[in-house]
Structure formats: C-alpha cells, structure tokens
Length: 163
Image (cartoon, rainbow, N blue to C red; front, side, top):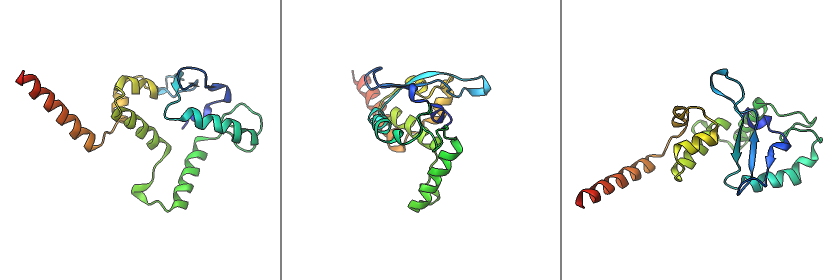
C-alpha cells in the first residue's frame, strides 16, 4: 500500500508495453536500503480501470500530483486506505476468516499469477522483491494447484520411463 499511495499521475504510462506500465518510483526495499524503483506492467485490466479513474473520478479532486489523493489534494496515507477497506468489510458484514487487507491482495495477486503459469522470477520482478525467497513466501498455491502439479509431474516421469 505504501507504494500505491506514493504514485503520482505522471507515473501512469498507458502507452508503454502491451497494457501500459506504472513507474513505481518509491518501491519499498527490504532492510531499509532505500527506495527500489521499478516499472510494473498494468495487468488484468488495470489499464482500463486507471483510464476510467483518471478520466471520470480524479478530475473531481484538486489538480495536484498524487494519483490517489484526499479532498485537499494530498496523497492518501496507507492507514487511510487500510481503515477504509476495513470499514467497507464491516459494512458488508464480513467476519474474521472472510476479511482481508491490502497486503493480502498483494499476496493473492502473486499467487494468482504463479498459478496461471508466471514463473517465480517474473513474479519477483512484478512485486519488486530483491530476493526470490521473499517472493516464495508470498506465493501460497491452493491444494488443488499442488495436487495438479504433482499429478502432472508423476505422469511426465512415468511417460519418460515408459519410453
């Protein structure tokens, strides 16, 4: 969340790549080693959502740099986003196991892309992790995915042995 709230409107580049890119200038680096900038592709329809937001929603707010701002045009704080999400989950009546945080969404995104066939190194780049071990901790494949992978590996081994 700390990366998203630090995005400015100038960080949205819809013309780069097949679906556009975000310039994450203030990516959080591990161990307090300072910002870790990167270019993140706008995947899964994000380019359409941001185009709608920039054309239909953002003009109602002051013309300041932050992509996501408050009524005064200041960048939202991560706590504000977390609190708003918690309030919306309360309004929906979501209970303990059915609740999630913005960070849970980041983990879900990593897992989704991995289960769809994206290799761990690519997921690592997408998340801006310096070490693959951090990415491995994010990816939590479902039991069905693990079982399917096991079946596929077993079938491949048997087919290879059968010649």
